Length: 273
Image (cartoon, rainbow, N blue to C red; front, side, top):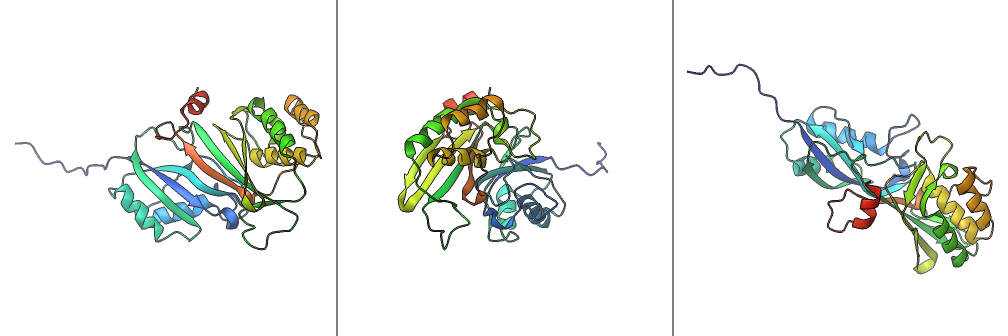
């Protein structure tokens, strides 16, 4: 007769993926910083309340202070037996109103929110009018003056594609790889002076979208020439007229992993090489 085991069996390690939506106004960004509260810190504290122990979460990418997210993706490993949906629902009771979990599921062990991503989508909302907005200003970036659509479209076409984006990153950026692929930048004019710009690529440098948009706006306003923008791409030297726009109109809109029904397959394949 087999003796009963006296050893406590270990629970299997699970990998859980969640989608996080947040208003970044009150936070120093997604990732831990020494100068304030990050979204990651708040999310991990809520998780600890549910799981009873600390777990480190991995985000699909960092967002700057003041940048929002509709589709940040994170994953974490746990031995808890609580269903993913139960963890999700439990966390909602411990999160502030400006951070929400919108989806949760168990995923394969090798899924990594950062490294498994094949396409990231940022969306930037600009309010193009002379008068400063009286409300909602934390969700749009205000741009004064007339902007020429044709000059902006020409700048967007020049910036799209495979380039060394060294001149389009923040001074604190430590990324080693600066040659990146950027899908064709798209611009839409919405009612009430709103301009919407869409950026898609596998990876982005720190402040890159804010600097790219600042250059596009500068070209549209006639403050920067096409030659000057081309020189930034060729030399990696940032022009003094290249501004970093305020973050409040920028959103991490969505992250694709190649298994979504509406994933732009051709773009994902290009960036997943």
